[in-house]
Length: 497
Image (cartoon, rainbow, N blue to C red; front, top):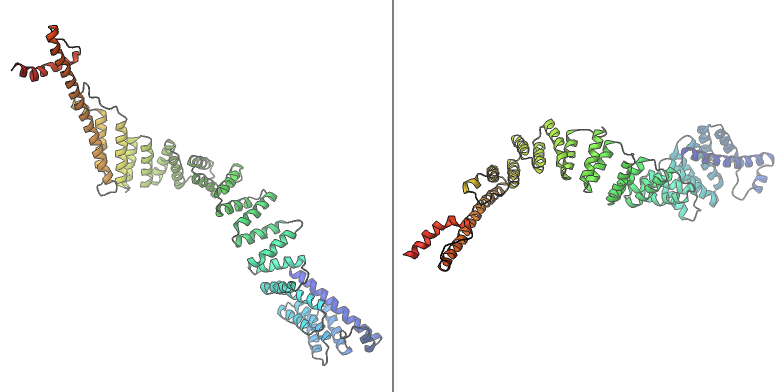
């Protein structure tokens, strides 16, 4: 209840008091005290001794002379043999006067004295108690006033809409939100034509009480009424996110972005983060790049790094490389040169990757990791070359092949991985593996050569065996003729002996 409303109530009390005093005074003047007492209800009448000063006080109050009225009424209270009704009435008038003088404590005290004096009917006491509670609330005694009003209602006093609204506001003002909530919900339900204030209050209370599910529902209802209020959409998305409903929050933010509602850098970055969080780095990168080009997101080095990271996560290394080159050259950070090297490595650009990694190493980046990736890139580049064939090649020719030379370059790079680094052990394994690959080639070639000789020896022997029957030595596989001298020297000589 506002100060203006309370003043209106108390002025009504003044009018009621004036009517009582004036009626008694009029009777006293025209027909005398005896007649007045005979016509008034027993015990609820003023004597001439009390009526005259009270009437003077009433006139002072009507003329806004409240200090004079207080003085006159206090003097009247000292009269002997005042009845309960007179005391209750005088205390009510004192309370009203003190209220007009902004002395609220005195006003409340005198109203309570009016009840305690025992001159009021039950309904009058009840009404005055309600008004005391309202005055306490209006005077900033929110919790005490609200508790008093709740006590009155608990005695069976009919509950009015004004009571509900007053209790809601009082408990909110006292920051006792759990006590305010049931009254606020009742106020909301009873409101025929719900206004924004009804929704805002429930939204406020649910938020402060941590009731995110119910808050999300009320905000959603508000959005249906006020769809152009961006703050409501933001609140709804936040509530969904905080309530563990991230996917729904993402859909809300996505809808706002596609609808052109989001414009601030903070909101736009939130969309980028959502796409990234939901494993859509390419879409996140597209949005970030688009908004940076549009100038709605600052083209800072950290944003460039984020953009390149997103493209790399999406395995779009070609699109990440120019961005990383720009970010690395502008910042000079070792980590960015290493990231550039990694992007180039993934694109198979070993020479450029090596240069980037060496720049990173020179700026203090992890040498073990850098040389490991340089060596790996060299090895993978070697694997693209054709495998050396055994037939018609010598061991020296195979060792000088492009594949063998690139494999050796990979070994050289693996040997530069610091032994004390965590990559050192893996580097040694790679060296052993590549060397084993080279040895396997030579072992295979040796096996193929030995197998060819063995097969030819079998054919040569068969030709000698057939010579007994045909009278001449013949062999179908002319390639085996190069092995005949060695065969003859090894086997035919022994036979002749």
